[in-house]
Image (cartoon, rainbow, N blue to C red; front, side):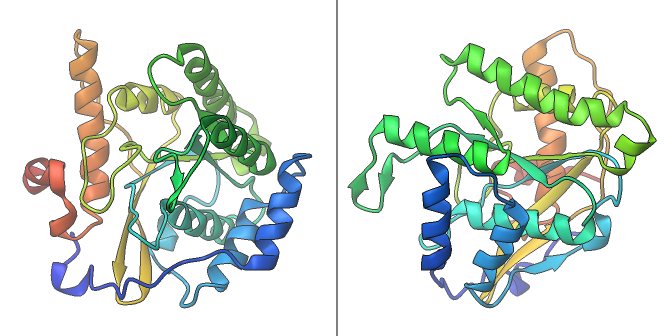
Length: 277
């Protein structure tokens, strides 16, 4: 079932912000790399931006074992995409309080290279994202095809998190780790084509049995909506052409995400979503 447009995307365009004291504490901890809880900090930040996001489908989050979260990249002026990521961290922690926290796969640098009107030096952007990864245990993915070695290292790290949990003992099964990412790696509201290569990347992450958990972000009134779909596994669609295989996997995943969104947000995948069972 898909979301009705008449009930969605009627946001009041409120501006989200970081509580000043908490922002100072986080910033001070970046330099030495002090570990912090993404779930705890996320909930504090979201509570400072009432009303809290409205979570739909919390029961769809597996209570045990590893899984991979895939979500649309949703943001607008006044609502950076990482606030949606915070809502996922808080929701997963609520559902799985005894399990390790969600480990987002994040970019290694600020995509716009500006903070409002202020330009951000590339070295500062890369340093800041790297330190955020250290502090919260996130996995940083180097931007651009030229960073082949760094991207391979990030893939190995993600595989170690999900793969070892999926194939591990009973203890690991109950404490499986969660990896999360946005296959589009950019965009605003309507869906754009998922990044080439992300399909094969996700196929590798789930090859040991970890399911995919789709999440749709959109707004209703003053509420950011975080809608979890049912976990699913990729259909076997083997192709000798790696590019076609990648495209088919990306389409499967983006259709699952798109069905959680209002139709006006289907964008690049509108036809595929409309034809999906």
